[in-house]
Every structure is written in structure tokens, then in C-alpha cells.
Length: 461
Image (cartoon, rainbow, N blue to C red; front, side, top):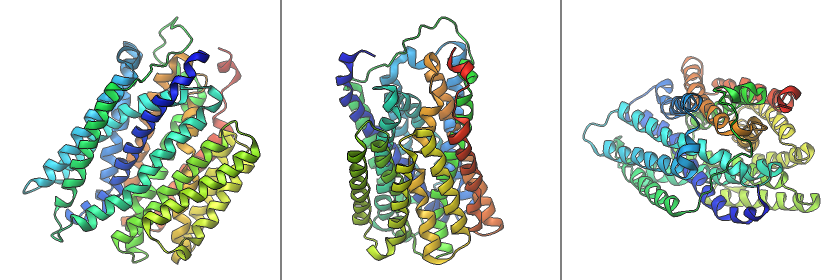
């Protein structure tokens, strides 16, 4: 990468970061849709979690198609460019949101059409994920790729933090006429469709570079990416991370309503602490994995953590004394970052172990202690996606885009794990069902400490 080009990456990074915010906001709206559609269509826990199945199944199917095309006739991004790939994803996503508006406006809306719209929405986001994640990782030096991706993911989490509060207010209060109809999602999704169409126009005129590897494509190995063990194990890591994160977020509102007796609107505000925790951790992680002096780094991490907490506290209006457990775990998050010494793999492993401990505590306690423990899992989810992603595509060279599509494919975890947890909630109870993510975090701990390391024979190829 030429030195003269590095200064030109600020605008593309800022543009891409806007994308991360938007798809974070819209993705987290699914957590509002699940309890809302559950009431509208009288669904079971299992049926309502099909919302996430339809959305995240698209990631698997579209990424599989992308990989097959890449393996047979060549990488599509090399042919159409990152910019066109991102623009296409935005247009598809905007169309999906508009379909929400159309179906919600009909006299007899059906659940299956909403599921199709969610699949279409996931299709558009798959395009964005395949193109944007590796692009952000490569807009600069390899040493700071995790830092850049964590920063972009932090704005993704800002979207997921605002969505439960704003979306919950619109769906459960402002546009809810009390008739248990689907009409409350009409205007919110029409607005989202409009914003996505506008963003597609901005991307069309923006300067988005195509990052090419320095290696020439001397041979066309259709499964070249799969010969890298850090990628193969990383694929399972993405499956486990997305599955664990999404299934917790998807079932928290139901848990708070059925186990803790908290109304849906208040529960949607508390949900912001779960997704907001990921935002806090990603801002801190971006600073932690930068090349700043340690003293300055720790000061900025502290300020970022307190500032982001203040934002969540302000937008939710939750009483300060009720958040003391969250502040305690925020302090633990800061200490684990310091102990990990900015190593992406070590940070991933330690955070996974902490999440396992938090879930075990939640399963064996009651009341607010149990609730805030599971809400605080978001703090330690924070860096997992970006760290697994960058560790997974490390040393892939010309197979980076192919590897990226395979990693995005395994976002399938968000489709498979939530219905499984919903099924266990129907059979047993909503709290016990939260044992499902334990296995996910156990694998992530192994990947962080062992599975992410490429074999020397692969590294030297």
C-alpha cells in the first residue's frame, strides 16, 4: 500500500462507518419486531424467533452463492468493485424496508410476508458485510486492522443502542393504536427505506476505493481460502459469536416481561444497555488496539467508556442507582482490556471466558442481579466479531474476499441459535434457555487462545 494513499482513507472510512451505523440500527429493530409480532400474530417463542431465522438465513444462502461464484468464475468484487457491491446492498435493503410498509398497510397482513421481507433485508446486508468489513480492515496497516474494524463496529453498536429506545418508543407507544395490528411498523420502516435510498445515492457519488492485494492471481484455486485453518476455525467462531449475541438480544425483552414483570417499553430501554455495552467495548477496543502510548491509551479508554455510558444513561432515562451492576462490569471490562495488552486473540479469549461466567451467574441468581448480569454480556461481546473477522482473514492474500464471504456466510448462527433458545424457552422456561449461548462462548474462548493461530506451513506459503 503506497504511503501517499494513506491520507485519502479518512473520507472512505467515515462513509463506511455510516453504513455500519445504519445496518446496526435496522438489525436491532428485529429485537423489537420479535415481541411485537409475537403479540400481533399470537406466536410461540419458537415461531417469533423465526424473525431472526429469516433474516440471518439470508447471510448463509447469499454468501454461499457468492462463494460458489468466486470459486468457479472469479471473485465478484474484483469484477464489479466494492462501491457497486455496497450500493446494490443498500438498494436491496431499502426495498425490503419498503415491503414492510406495504404489508403492514394491507388489510390482512401475514407473518410469512414479513419473514420474506426480513430475508430480503438480510440479503442486502450480506452484500454490505462482504464488501465493507474487509475494506475497512485493509484501509491502512495490517497491525491496526482490528482497531479500525472495532471503531466501525462501535458505530454499528451505536445504531443497535439507539434502536431499542427509538424503535421501542415508535412501535410500542407512538404508532401503537392498541388494536394489536401490524400498523405500528408502517411509518418506522418507511423512514428506514427512505434513509437507505438516500445513503445509496451518497455511496454512488462517494469515492470508495477498491483494495487490491499485492499478490498476482497466479493460479485459480477454487477453495484456496479453506486451506487456511485460522479461516476455517474463524468461520465456526463467527457462527458462535453471532448466534450467542443475537439469541441473547432477541430473547431479553421476553425474559424481562415474563420473568421480571417489566413492561415491553421499559424492557426495550433496558435492552439498550445490552447493545450499548457492545458499543462501549468497541470504542474502548479500538483505542486499546491502536498504537498510542499506554498512559494516553488507558486515559482515552476510560473517558470513552464513561462517555458512552453517559449517552446510554441519557437516552434511556434509567435511574442511576439501577445501573450500578452495569458500572461494576464496565470496570471489569476496562481491567480485562488492560490485562489482555492489546492482543486481539488474547482479548477475544478472555472476553469469552468472562461471558461464560456472567451467564452462569445469571442462571443461578434472581432479581436485578440476574438481569444486569445478562445485560452486561454486551460489554464483552463488543470486540468479538471484529477480532474473529480480522484473525480469520489474516494471511489470506488474494483469497481475502473469498474468505470474507465464508465468514459472512457463518452469520448463519444468528438464524440457527435463536430458534433453538426459543424452543427451550417453550419447553422449560425463558431464563433456563439462556444456557444455550454457553457453548458458543466456550468455543470462542478456544478460538482466541488456540484456533486463531495459522499453521507455520500455511503462513510460509
